[in-house]
Amino acid sequence: MSHVVDPSVLMELSHVSRVYGTGEAAVWALRDVSMVIRAGDFLSIVGPSGSGKSTMLGLLGCLDVPTEGTITVGGEEVTRLADAARTRVRGQSIGFVFQQFHLIPHLDALGNVETALLYRSLKPAERKERAMASLERVGLGKRADHRPVQLSGGEQQRVALARALVTEPKILLADEPTGALDSKNAANVMEILSSLQATSRAVVIVTHDASIANSAARKISMLDGGIVTDEILRP
Amino acid sequence: MSTFKDLLRVAFNGLFARKVRTLLLLLGPMIGVAAIIASVGLTDSAKGDLKAKVNKLGTNLIEAAASSSFGGQNPTLPTDAVARALTVTTVEKVSAVVELSNIVVSPYEEASDVFETVPIPVLGTDIYLPDVLEVELVSGRWISDFDAQKGARSAVIGVGLAQEFKFLPGEIRTIELRGIPYAVVGILDSVELEPGFDNAVFISFHSAEIDFLDDDAEPNKMYVRCLEGTEKDSADALRLAVNLGGPQEITTEIKSEALELAAQSDRQLQLIVISMGLLAIIVGGLGIANVMSISVIQRSAEIGIRRALGHTRQIIAIQFLLEAIAVGVIGGIMGVLLGMLAIFIGASLAGWVFVMASWLAPGGIILAITISVLAGLYPANRAAKLEPLETLRLG
Picture (cartoon, rainbow over the protein chains, first blue to last red):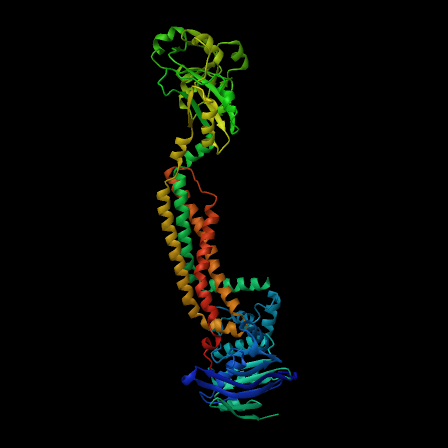
């Protein structure tokens, strides 16, 4: 399959289906989905439970492979890659933010951010410097030596953001990033996410919350394993 | 290389973050190794002084004595027995003696009534005996070439006899052998492998011939030093070489054999305690496997996020395996130290010599690491197989 690589296309899903189980028990979580994520996108994927958005998140994050169809990241077809190579693509191109933060409890904020930079042949000093810079970017430079239990929910999510950003990913995937936060902290996190909109990067928010979804620039609505609408809300 | 450093850092962070759990993990290999080291060390130490003695005396002294299966009186060795013995290539040194019987020995003539009843062995010998027995003279000198050739009546006495006859060090005195005065030229130190020599009198073959034998002095016993480790073969070869198909028969005895037997540790006891130590370390290994498996479940979210951040399955597996290895190394070293302490305390209390075989420390640590690696394989594999999508519980 010859392919002209468009540098503005960060990720492309082409006729992607994901089926769980086989035979009569087969469940089509995604059915023939095609979409493109471009540099500069500030995109939300919204849908109710069971609409297939979690499956979508797994595929976009290269945590899962589709049953049918192909996914390319930066022109590289990840659906052909073995697990270890796919893991490397994930580490290089994708940053994650989760609803439950998923910080490592025994590491302080700096250690958590540094975890994303391990096994990359970086000198410890350089790694620390980059992690610190990333923490300062989310306004938590002074909390670098705090463990997750010593941080508020909002702060924890900002540490998770710093961790996701420290590797300079092409695509930032946020899964219900405000789901575990109060409205004030939620607004703060959304503010940071929207500020990350850059020409070289895409921010993808997966949510069931319509108001969060509507604060994005582009909105994809899902239902029953398919894309219903893909609309530009703001230029 | 930097990847390996990262792995080490993560593994130690993981261990250090859960101190109590890590300490519990350490107990297994530590107690197992300590038990094995203490058991081997203590059973060795119990015989330590005997072992040291055997090492000091050497195991390579063979006694070859004339014997007679026909019950003949005073069997002897061939006159050239020494030369024949030296034809055995593993033989290093030989000295011959003839044991003379029924010679009354007294410190001076007037004392013969007092000392008559004490049987004292008198031996005719060559100039090599102290060298072969590896024994020193307390004072004076051994029988010299001159004594041996000219028949000077020189005698060397054992240190026990010197004490009995109340010799002063360096004192010039004579001794009466069957009434014939001999000059005492030296006092021989104790010979551990031949305690009878403590109370013996040594004179030259020549003097023995002239004063106490009817015919030529033929040796009836030889002391032979052979190359270490060839004792049995040398003894066999000696019997053939000295006999040469002739009428003289000889028997051989490796002098240190009895002592070595006594110095041997109680292997059965050692085996029992080693088995118990092995059991402890295996149970410890199962403990590591168990605790780490639970830990993998507890840390599944951490593993998931690490996988999402780009750490490969291999990295995750190695990281858990390294935690297990670190437990093995630290537990092993602590076990060795604990075991050594146990030997030291035990040996001190019982008044033994501290003995610890050189293979024990590295062996113990290697054993602990092996068990830990085996125990860590299963949890490491489980950790690597976790699917990040399942552990992260996406919203």
